[in-house]
Length: 403
Ligand code: GCO
Ligand code: MG
Image (cartoon, rainbow, N blue to C red):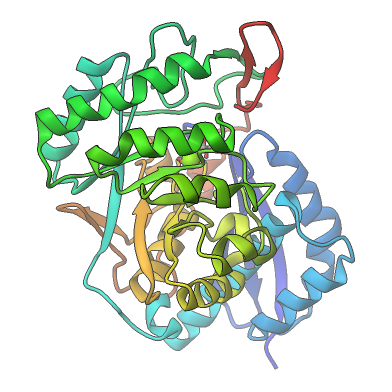
C-alpha cells in the first residue's frame, strides 16, 4: 500500500495567475498538477481545498483511474470548467507520481514515442496588416513552421488577439473586464485581405492559422471559410460558439477550410457529434480543461476513429505544468495534429522549472521521469495572486456579444 499524505494548492502570479496542486506521498515521491481557470482561479482553489483534497488523503496514488472516476461520478454534479480543472489537477499530479516511480518520462508510460518532436504554432499579432506580416517574419526567423496570425481591424476597438507589446498576447488584463467593440462586417471584409497579404509576403510553405474566437454565426463562418480557401489555412478556429454542435454542419457544407474547435470544452460529451459526424478536423481540448491525461486520451482515441486530430490549446493561461504534460501526450498520441505554443513570460518559466524545450519549430518533451515540470515554491511566494478577468465584447449598438 502506498498513500497520499498531503495535498496543497499553490496560487501564484509570476506574470499571470496560476493554480498549482502538489500531491505528496508516504514514499517521498510527489506530483504536480495545474488547475488554472483564467479569470475564475479562486473557484478552482476552493473546489480543491474544500471538497477534493479531504477525499484524497490516505488514498493509494497508484489508482489513477479509480480516483478519476471517484471525483467525476462522486461529485454527482458532472462536467463544467471548475470541476474538470480540479479533476485534471489531481489526475496530472498522479500521472507525474506514477511516471516518477516507474523512472520513465510520461510519454513512455502512455505507450512510447510516436514522433521525434511536437510541431507547434506560435502567435503573430500586429496592430495592422503590415505589422502582422512583420511579426510572421519574426516567427519564421525563430524557426516556427506554423504561425497563427491575428491583426487589428480598422473600425474594431480591441480586436481579439492583438497584443499590447510585441510577441506577447495576454487578454486577462484588468481586475474588472475590459470592454471591447466588435463589428462582424468589418472583420469579414478584412480577414481575407490579411491572409492574401501573408501568402504574398511569406509564400506557400509556412502553415498559417487563424482564431475567430467565437464571433460569427454559422453562415458567416461558412462565408469566411470559403473566402479563405485560396490561402490554404492550416485551420480556422472557433468560428462560431460550439454549444450547439449541429451548427457545424452548416459551416461544413460551405467550406473546405479545415476547422478547429474546443478550447473551452470539458469532456467528450461537448465534442461527441462534432467528432462522430466529422464536422471538425482538429480538437482544441487540452489536459487542464478536460479532466487530465485520463480523460483526454479517451477523447483522442475516440477522435482517431473519425480521423479528427489533436490541436491542444496552449495559451499562456495554461501553466507550464499543462504545457509540459501536453508535450508528453503529443509525443505519444497517434492522431496528433499540432500543439499551440504561446511562450510564457520569463518569470513564469523561472517559477516552473521544466524539461521541455523548443527547437526549430518543434517542442521536445525531455527524458526526466514524470511530466518534467516542477514548481519553485520559494520563488512562487514572491508573486502573490492578482485578480484579473478576461475582456467582454459589445456590438456597436451596445449589445453584448461573444468575446
Ligand atoms: C487561443 C485562445 C486563448 C484564449 C485564452 C482565454 O486560441 O490561444 O483563444 O488566447 O483567449 O486562453 O483564457
Ligand atoms: Mg482560441
